[in-house]
Length: 194
Image (tube, rainbow, N blue to C red; front, side):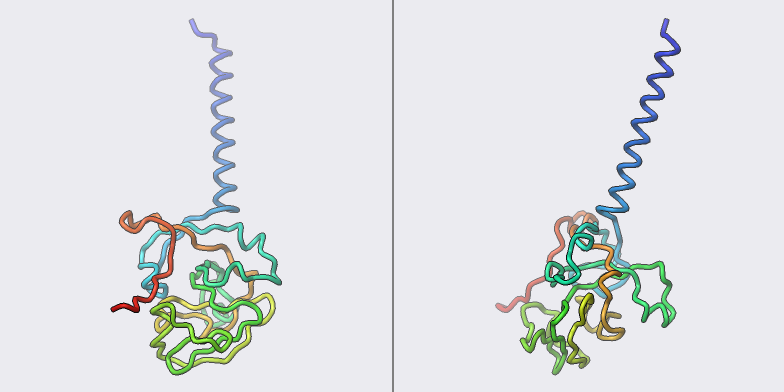
């Protein structure tokens, strides 16, 4: 015959363990890593519509606001900036773009080419054949210039301006769906051979 006191003690211990694991997973979800999905084509070809990704949330918390170079060329997820809220966007959604310019960088698009600090950016397909002109702008302190990899079809800094650093949620690091594209998120390199 089993002892009811031992059985109740064992159940209580299991419930406590389960509760601890739930708390740990929620802390990780809220503070360390968060799943997201891609709702639009603004990050094509790097990220496809409906891709599911993981966003690492520690980098923005430990990055000094005076040295944002760790975020340069990284894909970030951020809360909607005030300029878009004023234009009618909901304040509780998040956007995803690539960091193109950090404080002090001069950003310009002219004759279809992206320039950073007066240097033509031609390493990636999306840096060329841009169908608009913007700038030059110098990125101010505690701000970023962000653009979608699908430069011609992205609601980004070229339309609404600088992104305040405090709006950054995290850095996109890993695609986990679809399974045939699982792995670290990488920028597609320009094929210069053909």
